[in-house]
Amino acid sequence: MQHRTIGNDVVGRVTTSAIGLGAMPLSVTPQRPSPEAAEAVVHAALDAGVRLIDTADAYCLDDTEVGHNERTVAAAVRSWGGSDDVLIATKGGHTREGKEWGLDGSPEHLRRACDASLQALGVDAIGLYQFHRPDPHTPWADSMGALKDLVDAGKVRMVGVSNADVAQIDEARAICGDAFVSVQNEFSPGFRSSADELAHCAAHGITWFPWSPFGGMGGAGSLADTAAEFAAVADELGVSVYQVTLAWHLAQADVVIPIPGASKPRSIQDSAAATHVQLSPEQLARLNTTP
Image (cartoon, rainbow, N blue to C red; front, top):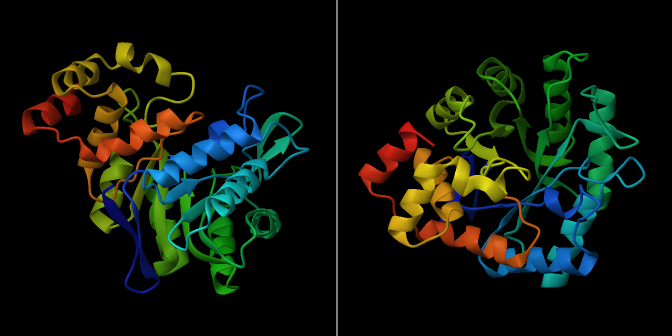
C-alpha cells in the first residue's frame, strides 16, 4: 500500500493509505450487509493496508438510526484490534427526516452533530470532521465558523468540506485557517465537472477525496461499459477496470486519496491493490481525454 499525507506543518501531518474505504454502502440500503459482514469488509480493508475510512452521521436507513455507519465502522476497527494510525473521517450537515435527506448547516446543528459523532465513534476528538454539503438556508461563513469553533474547542483536529466550489473552498481556508485540510467532491471517469476544484486543491496542498470514484453505487457495476477506455487499459494491464480507475485518480495529483465504497471484502481488496498499478504516460493521456 502506498501512503499519502493529510494536513500541514501547523496542525501536523497524518500519514495514511493512498486508498481509503468509503463506508456508506454498509448502511444506506435495505440490502446492506449484516453486522458481521460489514465487520468483515472493514477488517479486509485494514488487512489490505487501508488506514482511512470515510463515514458520516447521515449514512443510515432513516432518522431512527442516525450514526449507524459511524458506530459500525468504529466497532469494526475496535474488533480488528484498533490502531492509532487508522483515521476515521466523518461528516455532519446532512440530516435525515424519515427516509428523506435534508440539510442543516447551522452552527447549532453542527455542534450537536459533532457531539453525537464523538459518542458514536467513541473518541475524545475526531481526526477529520467535514461539512457534508452547503445549506442554502445558512450562510457558508456561519457553517465554516462552526467548524473553526469545533477545532478551537478541541473536539476535532482537522476539518474539511464536501460538495464545495472554488470560492467556497477559499472562504473555508480563510475562516478555518491551517485546520482546513480537505475537500470531498464527486469525481469519476464519467463525472469530471469538479476538475477545477481538484486542480485548486492540488495547487494549495489540500487533500482531495473523490467520492463515487467509480460512478456511485448505481454506476459502479457498469463501469466497464460506461468507461470503455478504462476497460481497454485494464485489459492491457491484466487488472480490473476498478484498479485502473483508482490508479487514474491517484495520477491526477499527489493530494488525491480515492475513497471507493465496498460492501464485500473482495471489493475493497481489489481496490487496495490499485496502488500497484502503473499507468504509462500514453495510457494516462488516453484516460484523461476520454472515459
